[in-house]
Image 1 (tube, rainbow, N blue to C red):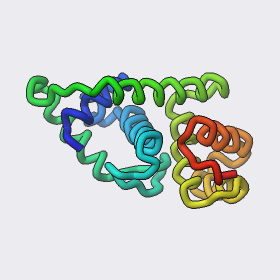
Image 2 (image 1 turned 90 degrees about the vertical axis):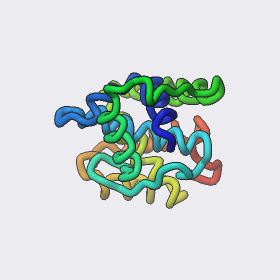
Image 3 (image 1 turned 30 degrees about the horizontal axis):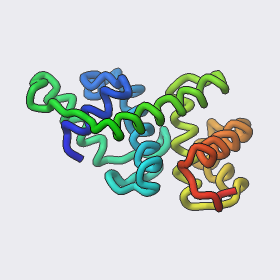
Image 4 (image 1 turned 120 degrees about the vertical axis):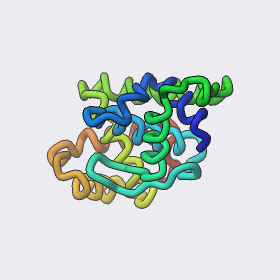
Length: 170
């Protein structure tokens, strides 16, 4: 992805770009990874821009990581990376962010944990269509979510209802 577009996306999500490259910027990096994963699936229904694998905090793209580290390193020179989203893209970005925030608030989760649950559930829902298998895959990949199967099921219903998943996913 063009760095100026990535920068515009991250700024639309209020992600601190400089913090992405700092040692204490883990939460910003997790948010960037999960929000981009959700956005790609909202728009394209497939990982067309970045490919993802499962990692400690859910879906992770090394290519995205490389891009935002480069952005953080180049953030001093704002003019080189000035970019703007189209009105339609900005609308979708704001929609995805609002949907994630709504999910988080209703379950009284912190932002990073909500995004981890949504992103990980989405990752496995693309491979399985039955709720039980998706929940089992999520709790196997993220053992700290054992006992939170209800939230995972709610995440699945939320993702399906908001158009991130095809109708055949149960």
